[in-house]
Image (tube, rainbow, N blue to C red; front, top):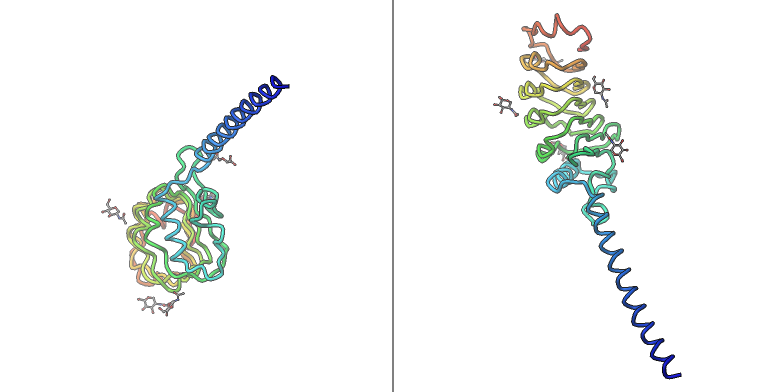
Length: 216
Ligand SMILES: *[C@@H]1O[C@H](CO)[C@@H](O)[C@H](O)[C@H]1NC(C)=O
Ligand SMILES: *[C@@H]1O[C@H](CO)[C@@H](O)[C@H](O)[C@H]1NC(C)=O
Ligand SMILES: *[C@@H]1O[C@H](CO)[C@@H](O)[C@H](O)[C@H]1NC(C)=O
Ligand SMILES: *[C@@H]1O[C@H](CO)[C@@H](O)[C@H](O)[C@H]1NC(C)=O
Ligand SMILES: *[C@@H]1O[C@H](CO)[C@@H](O)[C@H](O)[C@H]1NC(C)=O
């Protein structure tokens, strides 16, 4: 009887040890998994949150974007795509959401690896296209279609030498000249429909001769 009791105690002690090990093991395992799956880069997450604040978000369409712990991984946010290799945000696709915004936040400049930016149908309330867009030099596709943007097309666009697809149509934009266009040597699609080009008297030859596919 007495021996059985000792045996039981020993068994219980061993069981507890075993359970603690299993628990500890699975705990560190889930931590490791979390590290592997959260690809989002903190600076870029902050930039996206600043961009979201600049939109106003009255309709709260971005409820899936957040700073709460279960929403840390901005690579999983709606419309946000990261590189599988580097974790950098390479695509921001918010076109066709149709809502009232305020401005394009300058924090967007942090997304230096962005290749694709589609903000079509976001109403930026008659603000200007910020100059800094021209420093997102990895951009290949840029759509600001129907964004209620006014003013000049920034000459900094001449820095977007990788740009293939550029749609600035259906805003109230103006261009004094199109001097930046020849620098856009990768461009295969250009839509400036609705822009006031009446003061452009010096059409770059590159536009007139070499790019029959361009729409304007
Ligand atoms: C990146 O990974 C996701 C999820 O595993 C996959 O759906 C997607 O196709 C991958 N993209 C590239 C460019 O490999
Ligand atoms: C839009 O611009 C107008 C005039 O500049 C301003 O009064 C209004 O507050 C702005 N709306 C938003 C949502 O920022
Ligand atoms: C564009 O490039 C020029 C010359 O490389 C540079 O001086 C200018 O600051 C750049 N503009 C932007 C908006 O990055
Ligand atoms: C980006 O632009 C290119 C050139 O116009 C086009 O072929 C491609 O489909 C666009 N990519 C996306 C994801 O829309
Ligand atoms: C286009 O811009 C010119 C020069 O600023 C201006 O005189 C003209 O009224 C504008 N046209 C339209 C349709 O806004």
